[in-house]
Structure formats: C-alpha cells, structure tokens
Image 1 (cartoon, rainbow, N blue to C red):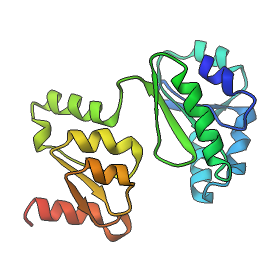
Image 2 (image 1 turned 135 degrees about the vertical axis):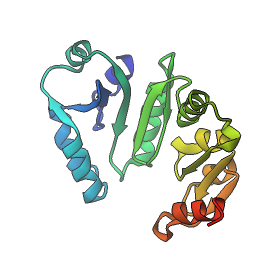
Image 3 (image 1 turned 180 degrees about the vertical axis):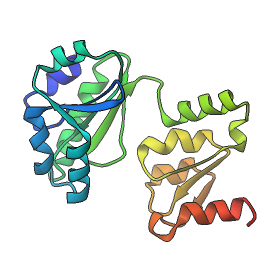
Length: 187
C-alpha cells in the first residue's frame, strides 16, 4: 500500500490483478484514454479492467489473492513517471518492477519473473530448461530468455533481450516465432 500511497497524486493507473481479474479505480479508469498510448491498446485496457468505486485499501481487503499490480502513465512524460514509479516500488521491501512497455510497469513480488515461471513449469513437467524454448521482446522477458536453453529474441526486441537470448529471429510482423519453430523442429 505504501507504493500506491506515494503515487496517489500523480496521473498514473494502479491496475490490480486479483482473483483472476483486472481491476482499476473508477476515477483512474478514464485516465487510460488520456495516456497517449495507441488507441487499440487503450481500448483493450479499458475493456479488460473492471472499475471499482471503493478506496484501493477497501478493494484490496475484499480480494483473496493479488497476483500483481500494474501502473501506466502518459507516453509524453514517460521517463518522469517511470522514475517515480520505479522509486516507489524500490522503496517497498519485497517488491520488484519490470516493464513490457515504456509507459508502464508490472509490480511483482520480489523473485517472481517469467524466468522463475519457466523454471517452475520445466520442473513440473520434468524437463530441463536447456530443452525449453522461449520468445521475447521486452524487459519483462529477459529472465525467461536467460533461463531457456533456446531463449529467442525477436528482431524488434530491446537490446537487453538480445543480450539474454541464445538466438535472434525475425520480427513479430515477419512471423519470427513460427519461422524459428519451423527451423528448430527441422521442418
């Protein structure tokens, strides 16, 4: 809660992923259309978030399990708000932040990542991560690309993804995922 409280006065969203849904204060739900993000993404965000009217504290007390938090801010002031949100997250012991976009941050329990999820899944299936393939293009994919034996960054990925990946394939628009799988499976 201290993370959210420290950011209340800023025009950022606080998306609460809980009990299998995504929730957002009604007063901040309308902020989505003002962030300057692509219209199709903004429309998806508005459709996929259920607005609530009570305080964040009351809402959090009403859910069983919080999976993660998310925060989005104006594209035009990205660096400013990214730093503010990152500082707020860093000030809370047990939280970490990662990003899939320059105007948003995923706020997670420390130690959770796509890489940790891949390791769990491989253990659950009884296979080595050396035999796992993973694809990514954003900062939230770096740990997963590092963990997978066939970690693959698409050509439109970030520098950090290229550094973590064992392979690089074509862009998303060039069907990099399917072309890499066709190559890897020898078809």
